[in-house]
Image 1: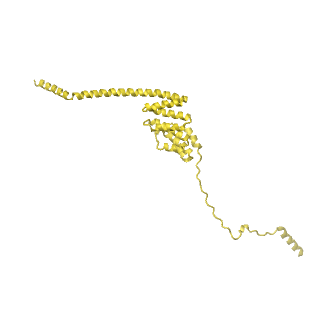
Image 2: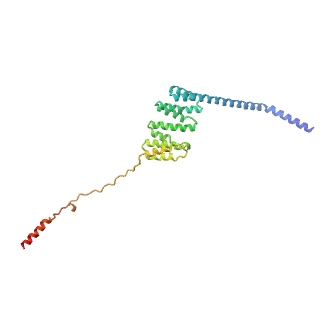
Image 3: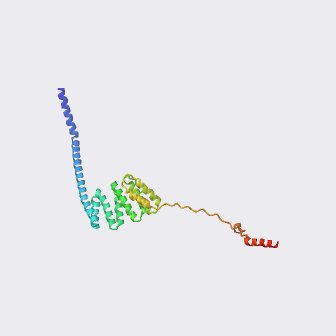
Length: 253
């Protein structure tokens, strides 16, 4: 009887707890199901966006290959406006920079690469964009801007490439010593990303650094009041006349 009473009390307690807390349990389940559905929908929409952006990027690549600047710019704008959170939007900046350079629009290429560097994320892609921007700046005779752009860039995968680019910039500035140090640093890179033979040629082509030495001042020569002994000329008796005088003296005796 006590056991039946105990079970009845437990059931009554469970009913009382459910009456008090059941709505919270149901709400929690509904929220969890809603979050799961929302997450799945988000993943689905993100996947759809990636697919759509991929199709657009393929179209962009085709326009770049054919040199269709207007069509390529239209597609790049759509990627930037509607798919900015995809990797294809960032990659479109690299593609447009190449097309701009093919069209001799170097400043537009520089602007596109600057836009890439200003975007969030895309760390690896930004290193590629930074190197390409450095080449564009060298093309524009802005070697000092290259030095400033590459300052404090020490990514292990790009160490040698950055060093080589700094060497090119220093060489353009006429700083052979700094260029040599940069080229040697590039050749010391062990990641095999640098064309060592090409860097070696650049290093050999650098002019030798000549340290200018000022000549020592020559001692002033004071003019002498008396003629130097080396410049004085004393008369020398001619040997023929001396022997003739001796013969005359003999005849007189």
